[in-house]
Image (cartoon, rainbow, N blue to C red):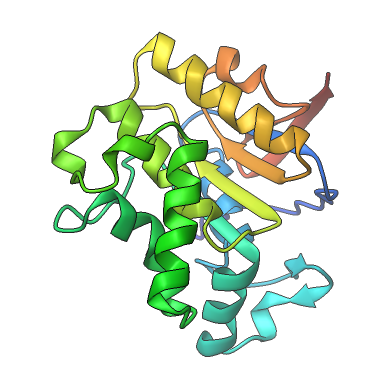
Length: 212
């Protein structure tokens, strides 16, 4: 017997306009994480197209995809994905290392971003010396290091308490107010309420769309 075909996304067509703040919601298996992975060039569509700034990412080779991610996208993960052996400053500056920035310039940029997220006094600390909320602030600063126009956030408050979650969301709202496009996956309606647009998914399809 052949394996059953599972369509993680099925006939989905949607434009995420520049300057918007989207929350994608849905039960487990609804396709929301697949949507984010496609937008982040972490997965390739098996059919159809995924366009970023008019570029069909399915046609790019691995090197071009890496360059696109480095220059155009910022990622914020639920599990923070910080490197424990590196300091706050080094974690923030990591994308700039891949972009061949001068080390001194990268250090200055990391310090500026640490100040923005309220961790200017913690540059020499390591992730294990920080609270969960502080680690997520480092992750946000790292996502901003390359000044990307698009931020992708996968359950950015999933490991945080309510007060810290609200603080992180206020920070994301501020980034959106400054002109960033943000696309966030969450399962929490109160977190999704911070976004200007909400997409509800089920069984690989868009169920409905709400706007504030």
